[in-house]
Amino acid sequence: MSAVGGDPNPNFAFSEAMVAGLADAGLEAVCIAPGSRSTPLALAFDAHPGIECFIHLDERCASFFALGMAQASGRPVALVCTSGTAALEFHAAVVEAKMAGVPMLVLTADRPPELRHSGANQTIDQVKMYGDQVLWAVDAALPEKDAPEVVLRNMRTLAARSYAVADGLRKGPVHVNFPFRKPLEPEAPYSPRFDQGQSSSIGRGVLVPTPEQVEELAAIVSAHERGWIVCGPWTGRPPCSLVDAIAELGRSTGYPVFADPLSGLRFGPHTGRSSIIGSYESFLQHGTRFDAPEVVIRFGAMPTSKYLSEYLARNWQIYQVHVRSDGVWADDSHRVSCYLQVDEAELCRQVAERCQREIGSWGVSVLTADESCRHRLDRFVRENWFDVSAVAAAVSALPVGGSLFLGNSLPVRHVDQFARPDSRRIHVYGNRGASGIDGVISSALGVAAADRDRPMLLIVGDVSFYHDMNGLLAADRQDLGNVTILLLNNGGGGVFRRLPIAEDATRFEALFLTPSGLDFAPAAAMYGLDYSCIYDQDRVALDEALCASLHGNRATIIEVRTDGARDERLRRELIHALKDIQEDNS
View 1 (cartoon, rainbow, N blue to C red):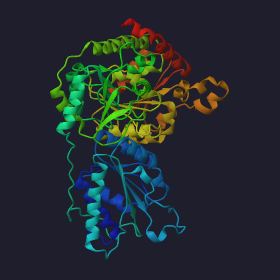
View 2: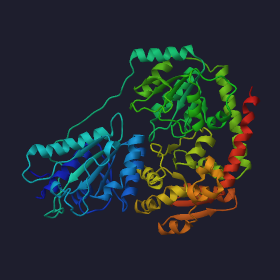
View 3: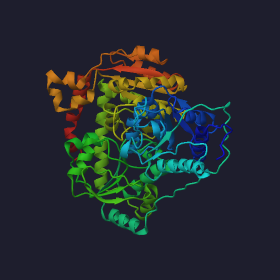
View 4: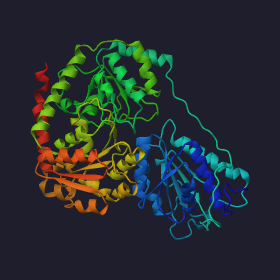
């Protein structure tokens, strides 16, 4: 078998075939965690002119950074690590990628078969180690000098197939495990060649709805004036064509669009042409004076909003249509009447052409409730200082075209409940597949690295920040000066204050709130980030800090210290004050 390059070490012939195949398939970025066993892969990736390498000292940070890059680019990003527990550090991000539908290629180096189950150092069972949390798992062929030519061709085919599966109709992670025998270094000065061999080309079309599906949905919509369009979280950045198609469906049917902040519908120019609803989490908590919708057309994953999901589950008579091209089920209350696995944008366009109806009186009552609620929310946030006030100020300060990454727990819930639909084009991201608090900083920095021309705003709580402080190193190492981190320090896990256990004063703080008591200023200094702290409800200082950072070129942490108990008390007071919102509009 002839090597791809000139080096006689077969580890490099195999690695170069894989890297060349991945580059031909479209791979542009790889995150590498240093290690010995992965030397052939690391050198091959580093040598390829078409693939950018991002080096991370911490495997977990590397994996979430790759996750963020893949979200922002919509394309697979590769991960490389050495053998042993290093590969296990990828696991949390692999789970998130599977649950959220984020394309990733997980490439783990391994010991050769004779060292497995032998007690050899740094050797664990890596074959299908991620179980069903990946879309496909392959134990690659062991590199050998005398292997048949078909084995090398198989490496290129494996690269093409791995990329295609990760980037398929259902996107997600693919795991390829590479056994390497020593020596792991090239036997001569390394001079790889990537131009030998032919790669496979794998294409994919779209699922076009059938005429019968279009006519049936159009007939249902035409027969029912009372309808909503509910858009849940969308992985990464939904294409403008999809956003515009859903917005046009709302306009042509007269159905208000309930837009999750992670759906791509809450922010953008289309908000001026469609009835975008954003305060549903507030006004649905007390019931509604208007009748329930007869039809709901859903897109994306389950909504972030607890009360929107509960409303749809409670009103069993609603005819629910869920449209999702990847075929992933998202209906925890089991109320979906019809599931359509078709291209969302194409279905919207065809149904919109057949339904031209002005919004009716019932739809107007929904809009009126939303607007009345919105005025009260905005006024309360202006007149009172709590963590939501800082979130609102930060979102308002983000420039057009900027990226917003929302930490789990309180940040994503605050934006869902309080962020008004806005004509500014803002790209919103979050890890809502498994909704964990790990890796949030690294994911946001991965998004920033995918497009350094866009300012990135991360809103994160103090516990999530603590979980991923190692991730801050990437801001300096990857030269990410476009990042602003709004750190909401409310003294622990503030989201738990919403639970009944919060009434148990003797156990709540120690077992659930778990305040760290840390001073985060030294962390900023250690990792080379600018830092400012906002005390005493100083709105002017916060606005100035946000403006300087979002329009500057230095990665910055803006810590806002709030009283978590007061934050939750004010939020509950606001929600209680909205009880009469329906009477105001009846």
